[in-house]
Length: 337
Image (cartoon, helix red, strand yellow):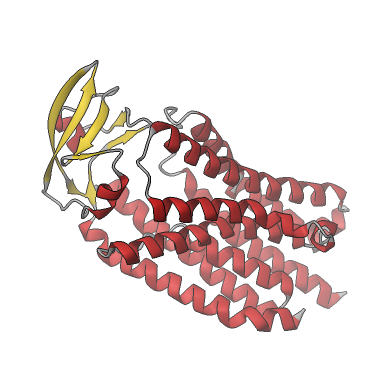
């Protein structure tokens, strides 16, 4: 058990430090973030316009289908990737299809609004919470289980952090692939941690245990191909990509949830307390269930507005806190036994 932890301790610690530095650089770059105030679906149809936003001021309307921005077609992936990000105060032409008629609009980007600025800071704090508690738990307990938790927590922490803008296309592509790999592994690691948590699932010792990595590897391969080939974007490609990621995230959330519920239902009242299963279940109910419901709705119907969706992800904070307390409870009970 300890050999496993010591083998990966340094890797986990270095990854955590690098992810935190990445988040800090992102916070420093936040002063350059721009705001447009509209959302589109897979086919670039405008489905949301925020009141008083640059999009509303420009004359953009719900139902408009965006054809190009700044003279570049929305389907031209290579040209869009080469273009530098918009600057605060910059005006770009947006051409839309409005009921069969081509309409040209001028949208002027503004600085990030207070709501987005607050969410950006909270995202960094939440990511920091995951990373620090993961490293703390692993250094405190030094077991394969605490290492599994640390891997999940450190990887998951990166998901909440926005990094700095990268001007180099090659470096930006490389970072995008690495970030995607961490993103996919974070959800896989969550499922593995739930399977490994006491009592450990027999699946992990079976010959089929490696299958849990297959969806992650398949999706990562798709991402690498898309980043290298950079095919023209289409509504169909956007939908397929969104559904693949949606099914992956929902699937691994469900694996984690169902695994824990099974362990909880089979445990005695004493084991639920002594093994930290009550705390684990609390962390999952508060931290995963609301997001799972919201994400499922948005995956099936992107146009559906879920009340409080801008702040619902705050509940994720329950996961690292409850999971860390559960680990402490589990190992405290083992020492006393």
